[in-house]
Length: 416
Image 1 (cartoon, one colour):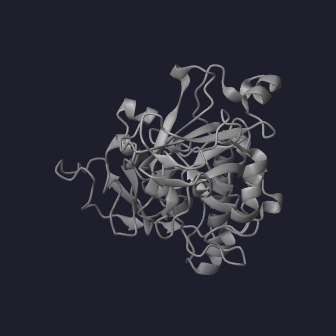
Image 2 (cartoon, helix red, strand yellow):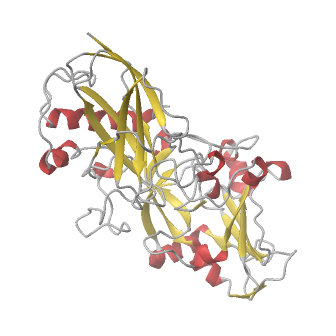
Image 3 (tube, helix red, strand yellow):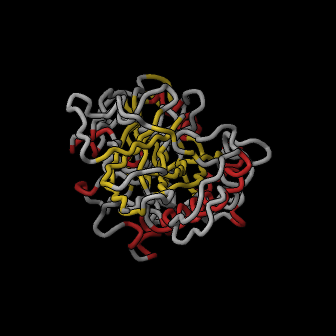
């Protein structure tokens, strides 16, 4: 599958510039008609200098449910049910079916829910900004890449003064007062209260790319779980329940999904020509989703169709893979950001606005390569990632319901 909308345009632009900077002349619609030049870091830096990286809110892919969809309700109804910032509230309450101990629950029933103004008061001291790619675990392409802003959920949890018997959080959003429309998710309390080294916090998110979160994107406030697939980042958030129940209650569990899966590292093609002339360098590009294992390499393999692969090597571990080039971070981030510039205080970026490392986990990386010296014939072309543990895609978790990460293939005909 191909990227859609703004990500498609951005990818074409950055990879077009990449090939031009390599010294490949006559690039038209990314069809290369001249020679290959040597790579160096300066060329790579220039290739990505003006790359638009973030997806504007309006261009994000959408996975949603509700009849009617909450953000399509009339304004008067949205105000009534708390789907506008001026009326939004959040309950943070104990599970009535369990025995958690909390000294100061927040609820509409008690007249003391967390309001949007209250959230903004917390934001004055605790707001965080970080990069995250949003992906559905059952879709093989990302929904969008963005800069998200909010308040760590733990700051709100501690405000309720929890004491004991709390092992998990249940949470859900607005569902039109119809239990069948409720979309629920859950997290271990430990993941909310403490972040693994190098990870970002679970947060109550209210901005995307510097703009207030739209209703279509789950605003006024949604959950944002940085290391997980999209179903953990529940939209139109209204209720958080602290429980001593050790069992998850996620809606997604009902469809055989792995609800505790970290995001996987995996690669997909973008530009994948079906025909080429012998003697021409053939541009191939793609993107990589950087999961919990990080990303060290993207690799590509070209195999003649008349060269069948042994059935006892289904993941092609013995194939002659070769490295593609992972493009460096952009200097213009695109999206809805004014001038494409990052704001201050983005996590894991230095004072000059450059990432402390690249690629970053739970984000997107672009890659590109040229195929050369292919003889006339029919070929299968595959791509894969190698994570920072040296493990090749689709391992270590090749199971479909824990996130899509199969090795992708396309067919290429080289003609005399």
